[in-house]
Amino acid sequence: MPVTTPRVCVIIAARNAARTIPVAIASALREAEVAEVVVVDDASTDDTQAAASAADDGSGRLSVIRLDVNRGPSFARNAAIKASRSPYISILDADDFFLEGRFHRLFAAADWDFAADNIMLIRDDAATDVAGLAAPPFAADPEFLDFERFVDGNISRRRVLRGELGFLKPVISRAFLDRHGLSYDENLRLGEDYELYARAVACGARFKVIKSCGYGAIVRADSLSGRHRTQDLQRLADADLALLAIRDLPEASKAALRRHERHVRDKYRLRNFLDVKAERGLASAAAYAFASQSNLVPIVRGVAADKLDALFRKAGIVRSQPVPAMRFLLAATGAATAAAARE
Image 1 (tube, rainbow, N blue to C red):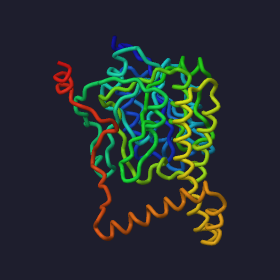
Image 2 (cartoon, rainbow, N blue to C red; image 1 turned 60 degrees about the vertical axis):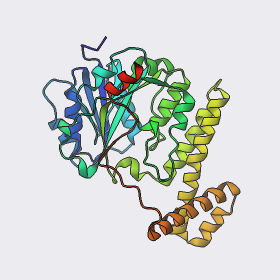
Image 3 (cartoon, rainbow, N blue to C red; image 1 turned 90 degrees about the vertical axis):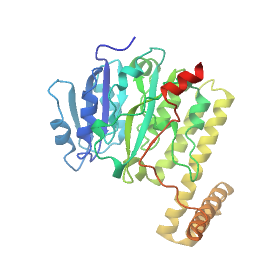
Image 4 (cartoon, rainbow, N blue to C red; image 1 turned 90 degrees about the horizontal axis):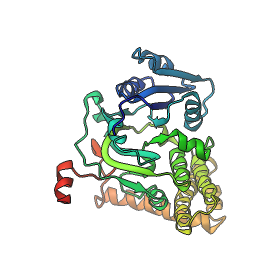
């Protein structure tokens, strides 16, 4: 049965988000199922705290916590989870928003521990009036993610628009987190969602995904996730190694983790090579590359691919893939089309 009484805590970790956070908060407070909105201002240097407080609708559901030292999104989210009490938790990024009716659709059935929906990805320069946006009436077409499907779904591909499953923003059962002692890994500033979801599924979480859309994300070149440090890639690869230590993890799941770890580690090695080159010169970078075959192969492959891409673009053989004004994370069909297909 659909939820009729509030039961969700929306958590917003924010840093220097004064411009966008009023829309995020308003979209959360609009939903009847939302009992709490907890904003954690992660030591912003702008007016994020004041902007968040000014977005209060007077219902008593909004609280704003201020951190004096920047601790990262994992710490901020864990602090908000500890400060809240609702049985369900929903993460909302400070520059994103919910589409109206999101939770009604997600709570249409109670057969999950994590429940996510499709994401409308909107290019920043096309995001004029998001308050009135509505998604096409996609069929729910529910599926449950197993561990291998989820981990493999977080390996990006060159020249393909990003669509990793770690971008999903599920509603999370607090009881499941408490039962398994799960929280965000505070060592991570990149991939913290991926790590938590993967660990939860490894613990037996029923991770349900529906294709109907209830979450809007603004794609910005200057987003925090787009400005990660080289060290963040190394820590994410190390997180995969920690996941490999989970007891009784099936071999197929371990193989998926190794693929993801290698994918992230190779990105780290290439990025570190470029950092060393910029900071200490080509000779030092070459020494780093030739220190091991594990370094050399991804560096040569990555540099060659970048050079070829640049050459082909200059020659007009390959063009940069344009980012559409709007797209959706998950491929979906209209409700009418899906109903006809079932018949």
